[in-house]
Length: 555
Image (cartoon, rainbow, N blue to C red; front, side):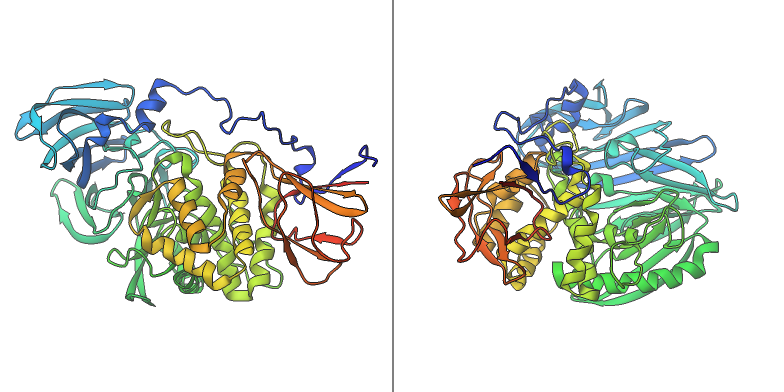
């Protein structure tokens, strides 16, 4: 057999130079992490010793000086006996004092970690609290949300437009908290003081507005559900407000929109077009909107987008900049990418949150995949799958999607489009759309308002589908290269095998004979005959629309 001529048929634009898979490649690409990374990302006993129940963040924004000051109340339950704990606040922000039962506590700082010692033993299962008073000049983000910090901008009329964005660096870049994804407060009060001629919008419900008689007003927002720290948001501007409602699965859902006055008429048209159709689609696929008690909001910001829970940051309209239409929909209307993508995070990312930043794919793979389900709801399954296929061109296969744990590290940006491709492949393998829909809804019900691990998500999908999919997730998420199907004729019969790094990789695959009906085959790491009568190297067609793989044909 002549193996000199190898044809790599790879089904996305830039894959021609992808490195060949080898067992010697490590799951975790070699990177060096600092002590600061470990302090931020590792859930040590000094962090796991207490479980956050409630925060009251009370902060004042001096916009002219780009200065903030305030306090945060930590209310917690002890998970073990301890006298010392860690919380987090970036080193460029000052700690004015830490108060516990009217006593000022001593503390030490190392990078962005703060360690406090209590005067007495905090006993397991006891409930207690302390308050951190702080002030300073927070990091200014010039290219949010890629950069973390506070954005100090102005609208086109010259009014201040200020917003926070802190997913990658963490919430401690602007407020003190236990800055680890694994621990969410059960509820939270957010009090923000701003110049009296402006408005402030945060997560949850507005409880009251207080005139402080010093040129400032305080806006008190209460979040009645658990919330991850990077989702806590401040938005300050000369906002106009309008509202609506949606008949959700659990009853009427309030819709509130905070936009700049000169965008009000545009927002009323664009938001009306996009929001209700996407809520209908996502409730169908994922289950009831998970934060009905806090409502649904879109808030105009000076940066493109962020999935802030119940207060989604919105920085552009379909006709605005940056271009943010959903693309790749044959004959379909244009839809607002920001609203469609960021709203999906209310289910995946906010309702279900990764315990470690290394598993951010749980947010972004499902969030990107949701875009195709929205398209499918409008135009049919074929259109939704075409949408996923059209987004392959952005996949780089440069790094692993799952990043190292315990060091506050995100994986490759491939978690978006490649992650969506993976989920569509899983759906194809399951081959039962109602079962797949039940799995997506089941995930949101089983893990409602919880933080989850890689294994919890993967094991749930495997158990509910009845399919052994562990190696499929492993290959696409822990390795940067794609699995390759090798075809070869042996003793007159077409044989196939998988070349992949994942142990015991055995992904079922759909093939057919020249535009006939598709059939599943079950390749392994060893060459086995393709079990389909009449199949040959010349007439075999692999389902490359729903599978993102490499293909080797040997002449």
